[in-house]
Length: 640
Image 1 (cartoon, rainbow, N blue to C red):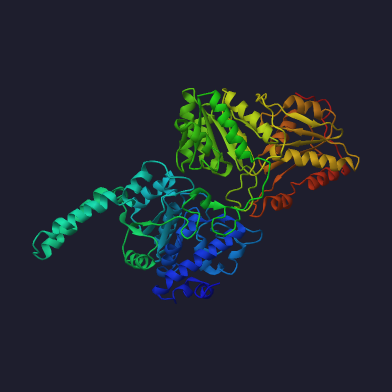
Image 2 (cartoon, rainbow, N blue to C red):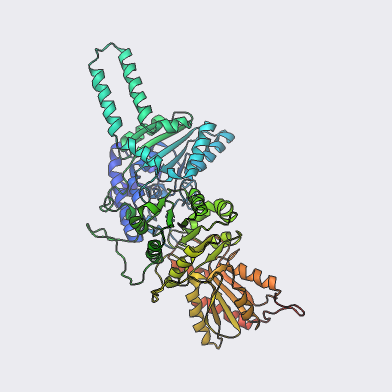
């Protein structure tokens, strides 16, 4: 720990330093972030770029009385270090440690919990209006990145704030890099000014011209000011924000902490909605940032030795994302109607390779999941085969579009949900544990999940050949099982399950990533004399009713297993099936994610915590087998 940082435990301690000491403190914070993320992994680049901005905010404003609202949270590591968590920063993203994102449960300085982008201005506006209604006088500041500004929700909030005219400061942290390269007209608009070519050339020419005019006192100065402001209005993005009711200032250097402090002090006295445009360098101080901005965004643990890359265990098993990527490219070579759609995550979702081979068929819509879904629906109406690759947790943002624009019109949009299930260290904002429930209730949808990476390939083939309505596929984070890959891809019958292991008296119905743990549990049960049938359900909707009726006719114990919320999930679908068929469910249980938000920890620890391990699956079956009662049909009723 270096000389300045070891004295900082709160913003009050920060204010004891002179402004001249802050650049040195900034470098100490930057090195501390690199040191810890090198060990723990996590989001790196945005926080490194926002260090001076963070220092200036806490130096001028009085948090937590003044409310600082961070967007997404990737840029808030320095904020955590300055707000009572320096001594526990080593635990970030570790089990039992602090979160990698701002969390209201963790600190009063974290005014709003985040993990998804584009929420800060809406939340901050709500806080500002609440302040006004209560007659308080504190300041509210939203810090949003240029990538998050591509989300429509941010502009809905800006539009509302411009109308309400309440006191609100929005800081646009413009580093010209989101998770992937920024896309869209807004990004081009911001880049036009941050490059400085047109604006700076025109400004220089104006001053050169004015230098030739004889000095005549205040008139010349006022003329110079008007001309300069006219140029600024024409060239800078301020024209956009001021048209929406904000006073625009900037762009300013986000690494000049002294100037940032002066600017914030000046702006703190202004009334109404204010937007300050700050230019920062993502990954500042990290040797690899300028070489690979995407990997700089979020990293696994790595060595800080100069020139070294991320340190990863060598593993012959491909990731599910990699298998999806390679298979989709293969299918797209055979079918020119296949197009890929991503919401600002071509790398994370595996569509980067698709875009490199088919640049005219990949559409990155920015952080705009709602638009992505309806855009795909529009493509589907014209006979295209849109494949929307998206993290399960981010698909939640487009639920209305899934229901109204895709499901209601029965359009063959293909949705591939990566990171379905528990994702580990990123925690509850990124766990994909609700998709089965919220998709299963939408009419016309087919929903499937592969047991391994080979079955994933066949399911992708099934999706692109499925033209009778929407279809969704979920796959987990991480590597595959390591099975042999088939040479030929085949279509799977929609709604058809497969029996992996024949048994008697007990049926384990497993879905997706839980299939192999269920098979392992059945092997453990053999030692206790219980020989369970194990079914790879494949589909959460529609269920294989013929197979289920056949298996359940012998009145077995039934256990469903899934890495999704139990409420409304695959197990609920089976219970509904049993109820509709008239079975009395005395020995039926469902295993899945409990009715709570699961915290952050390695995936294996989380699975053990909630009981989705072979050992616990076997234990539940043993407990069921020792209890009284059987699954049975009431007298006089028959399966329909």
